[in-house]
Image 1: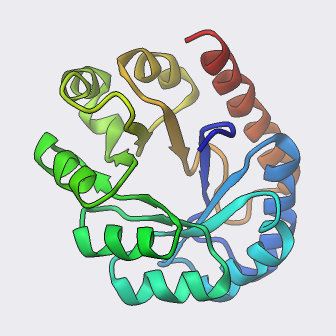
Image 2: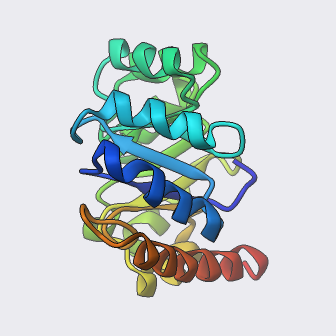
Length: 204
């Protein structure tokens, strides 16, 4: 994940919204797009997102809870699997499909289990509730090459503290998109996050 480390979480997006919303996000510089599987018609929306942006963005699914779902998303051409929890079989299946795996972890035990299963990136969730101090504590014992994405109740004002604590990237949901939000506003909000994260990446 060498591109800008920002994952847009499009929970609740409808099929009609996929084109204008994802166009806005990609235009603003977002290159990781996740549609949670508890959204309306998620597989159809993911397929449409891949048609539009699969060549230039990492498109995939969130809230993935089974290996069967991994395989469904892979069959659509998805390249990103994000889960709210750790299931080592999901991690292994995702890696076997040459897709990016971001399992959700909340403890050092879960983090190390995920790494042993092959995960190169971790989703610390719910990061906003756990706090940047918590991330700093567990980062001290994680392998340096493993990237931790802070996800869950993370706003613009939280980015710097989590970055200093060891976050390599962020997953942002309602701060970027909410169902029915005007695509122009999605673009403006994405611009803010992209600019802030670019500054953190260039001045670690």
